[in-house]
Length: 362
Image (tube, rainbow, N blue to C red; front, side, top):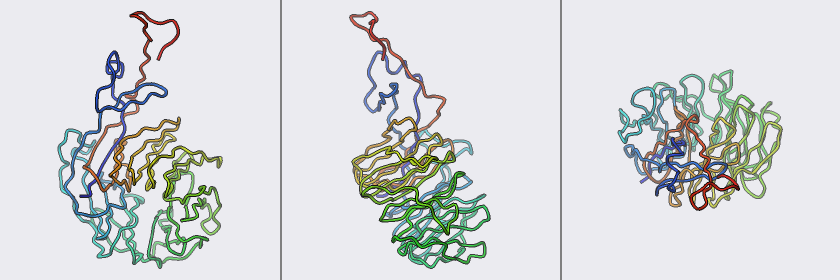
């Protein structure tokens, strides 16, 4: 049955002791560029089952809980992730408190969950286009957008919302009074993704695969067009990078602050359903059909955090302690601790017949 899966990356010290003189043990993955680092196999912490549903959307709230939006029953679940108010448990003990439904829309789907200012989380339901404000574990209807599918939400500084919708490719602004107005209609069927960082607001359309900057939402500026694939998701970091995930072939691109694009990844998966920046110029990517969760770093490294072809990874959320949470149709909840300060490189002298070689090191 569908479950929640949660990962982070970490680098296990002391690396030198674990790599020399024996090779990595079974269950560990090894990255050989630019230095060799051993990673223990992911450990699992299973959460209670939330039902036989599709977990399409996810985010976290100010209290350290995971919020999950479902298909085909249109619910939002609140899942506790912490036990001591400081960091997630990693010893296999389930967090205190049980998952609870905080929103039941009686509609088929929750299409979007986005964390707003303060303790607010915004949710969108389909096919009504209703928007909900979730605060303190309770939900209240806020507005109704005249479009059946709200794929993205973004809270602006004035408290209003931008809403990316389909199937008529319209971008709406929803005021604090709940009234919706059309800002722009794109020459495409869906505004499929919407993201914001300190560098600006960005959106993408489907299926033409175009990415736009929204300095003035009424006059979008085209930044990028994905070659021969559709854009499925977007993410942006505060340094000005915009990350693009595609479908039905899984590519990940990075658009830098100067507008230059670079392909970061192309794999066997078909869909990149969600992306989350790592805060250091890289990005986490959730993929499905030959499912994999990847960490693509700023220096070009590809960390394959898990490779489970029978699992579909759908949504990502960033919790505390650099934890990345992924919703799937596959396994249990897994947590891997991440501390950049613990990353170590081990330089090994090459030995020939028991003595150090003259020609180099690894």
